[in-house]
Image 1 (cartoon, rainbow over the protein chains, first blue to last red):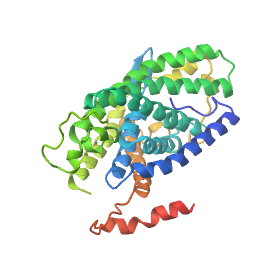
Image 2 (image 1 turned 90 degrees about the horizontal axis):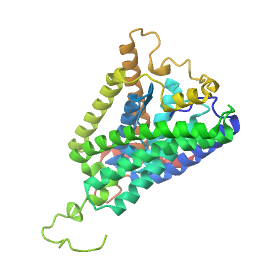
Image 3 (image 1 turned 30 degrees about the vertical axis):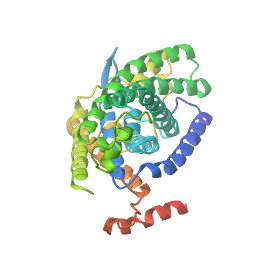
Image 4 (image 1 turned 60 degrees about the vertical axis):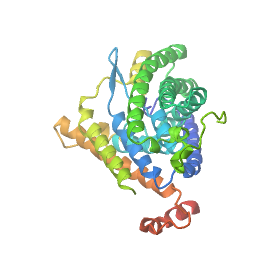
Length: 235
Length: 122
């Protein structure tokens, strides 16, 4: 999904650069609320882990491959604002050191994978967690669905940018169909990896998972037996 | 940091190093979804070389190291280390200090306080 230099014209790249800069500025403020002594080191680890797993391209058939983006995984693990920062660091390191994704396209890549993928994944996750019973399975289901939708969504936003500032004169409908179709398949891989990693973390350290905070009972904070009749309808 | 947290972090970093340093050799080298779509739809040729294409780590290979397994593995390890340092440094600088009373003097706290102050100034 890393957009190289050249696909989009200069005005579009400048515009996505501004969107990316604004997003990061807001995330720098928002992340302060999510990060404390316990979660800050986890956020560093999450970024490093996403970098590593993004190297693991998996085959998607037809001579194509895909890799994890990590929008859902990071947002559920460390919170959406911190996720934006984690994804941004990964994308900057990839573009600057590894020439993976263009330099003038860095704003585009941060917009697609740092903003669109994270926002959509987290939105879908929150919605499902609200609708489903308050269980670990629901957290995993929400993360899996969020991961799945985030990939074709980011792909279609790229097509939208391409419609505005693509330098090649090709059929947009065909580009949308090809991009959307292949990224639906890659989205399945995204969901599988997200659910696998998240269930492993939930198994050993559920207390570190931002998106599972609602599963922790007040009893965890103030251990006192036999207080909650468990019938209370209050959320 | 509690011993439990430290254990989890060390295990996580080791896993990331293993994936990037060893596992990545076995990753698919087929074009990714975007590259493939660009070729299919006829705009692949509009891609330009990044200004970073001459980086000694470009395309996840260390220039001068011929063995592809070693070259890719080293590049992965460097990438994990740099990402961990940058993201870890940033999130540590942004974190809420346990400013609660009676947080029996954590020596790490005092030393790190100037960072967000400088951060806010700019």
